[in-house]
Image (cartoon, rainbow, N blue to C red):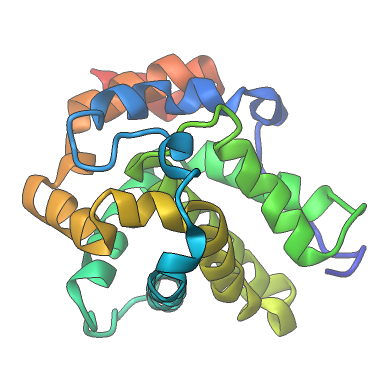
Length: 227
């Protein structure tokens, strides 16, 4: 990314200092009853080689979902969903993007202002912040896709030669760092089953409470959503 690339404008600078685990505490509590609520380290002692091909499939599916979501993010006419995994992620990313606009812009701002590493390392650093407490759940995975969608939209306008890289980054990151967790918790089928059936992310009352607690006065939309 060139040094001249501008960051998102209109970001509340205080949002850059918020702790990611505070942002996701309520997500973890709210989605703890859905499939996929275990910690990341619970299955790390197993033989990775025995599931290598399955992990590769998780990575490829993660990338395919990312490319579909990014191609249909904030467009006037969406393409037909190729499968239910993409359908579930499109729906949840849209809802999270609408309700976490300040937090997502802050993450993109962090990405565009970091100059000490290449693009992939930069992406990994920002993504790692979301999982720094050692806990993974579908809520955090969705937020990662929402961040990557916002980042891709930014790159389309400001650095178009790099816009197609983010889908690959998401696939590699999710597959290598969290692929085992996804397999242990029902795979992408579990994700689609949970969010297409329960439509959990559209619980507006819960989402308003989450925003109020996590962002407070930093995002004026938080208070209005909590009412």
